[in-house]
Image 1: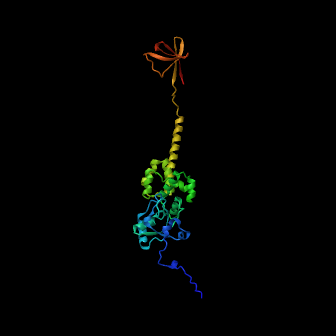
Image 2: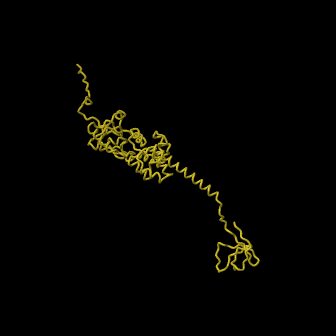
Length: 309
């Protein structure tokens, strides 16, 4: 009688006590399924990008966010990419406020998506869309890209904005002191308005500086009104100057011609050199017609003619 065959089944895969694989430990070979949902990344392993264009963080807004994160946690995942040199560490793509708030309230992890293809242009665009990027921060980014050799038209194309927006923001770099104060005090942060004001400052520096120190409402409308006023005064002044020049032209002009003194010395004709002082007293320096120059006694010279040239 044959013995019955007994099949042996491997049930270890059903063992729920076995430790689950750690997705973070496989960050270099993350599958599409893992990328489809946020990972919980230790906040201590995430570094902010040193080239992050955003540098201004409103204190009151950060206080509100910290309170929200303390109570509810971070609901919108941040974006990260692998650190270029350090294993199991990350560089922040965007989400600096959420990361800072998490650290401030003592959170140990934060939800994050991995985006290895992230660029600094995407970093700026994300902040622009959230309206989190200040005008000066965008201006500094544009300047950095131009220093790297990018053209304004290309920068505008990659940011998805008009070229005029790029031009306007460049006016925020190295502004005159009066405009720097306007921006830092919050009187005006509009790139377009400050661009117009800076162009006006090139023509009327003193007037713009005086106006900037007194003006309480600095908008495109008030800057436009100032431009009309200053250019109107300039036009009036130009008209007055033309009238004055016309009046001067009508006056009889005084002769500024230099006379030439023609003399005869010992039957030789020559011209007195009035630009050269004679070495002997009571003498004249004569340029004779034969090309020679001599110093002769003045009393022996006979004036023949005076010519005004």
